[in-house]
Image (cartoon, rainbow, N blue to C red; front, top):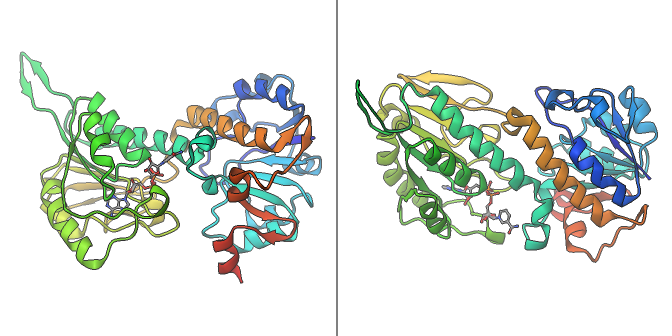
Length: 371
Ligand code: NAD
């Protein structure tokens, strides 16, 4: 069995699906590993560090020989249409969009596993790439907020006077939000946080944050949040607006799986903030939690900076790749047994995360959308 690791082609993507330290574990799987020349360069791993792997020049030559392909970003429509027939593909595959790509995967009879679909169950924690990358994104967003702020985050007592700690508000306290809270706290900020899932109150408090009560609770399926009704949204906004208006920095991470990001901060609220305040909107790529967010840009509105960074995990490409490579390895270990591909469809992790197999779209919501 040959496992192939291409160089990512998406613009701005610095991560790679396999790093040298995880490659060592591949011995246990009994597979041969092929790495495209320069695949790890952008995340700080040189070709000669991939000891034991064969370095292949060019994507075409790589794919030609591949039984299993490991990627970070989904292939383009064209790339998907050229994958070796019947190959396995593991990576982020954006099942909620990119219909032509998904059709092409099915056409090529590719068995694809989407990291987005890995069930959030205890047994699959080591495979949960959404979490590993969200952790990194939350950390980076807190640092970005500190960097963009003209204020210091910690309290300083100096001969030149005392600096009061910054007040940071974090909205959405999932994996990324909790890491943003922890990071802002480590920098010395005073942190307030809010999430629609009430289970997060305790988690926020355990990190030294103060939970903002809005009275709105919206637990959805599978431990995720559901979309709010218009009334709930208004109620939430009323309470949050006061907290946001007095914040030095706001980090927003609110998301509903497969849906556009919930709009939580409107223009009027931004206009109530002091000049020099900062909003870092982690949800920029799915439409943004703030009405003024522009994906991939930093805009200034009445003195308030609104940043909508894209592909945040890629900003910490070395560790993001390392963690992602471990997630992929753990998934691969469920697929490859004694040097052979053995797909056990009774395994919930494999059944749930499979996007296409044998010419069909297996993931029911995606199949229904494509029909
Ligand atoms: P996510 O990225 O889908 O969403 C981020 C956060 O936004 C969530 O906490 C959500 O509740 C919140 N949110 C949604 N709408 C909101 C709104 N209008 N206002 C404020 N907040 C809003 O979520 P995630 O971080 O991927 O994880 C969410 C859940 O999954 C958590 O309960 C987490 O503990 C759980 N989880 C479980 C496992 C596991 O057991 N293996 C692994 C990872 C995550």
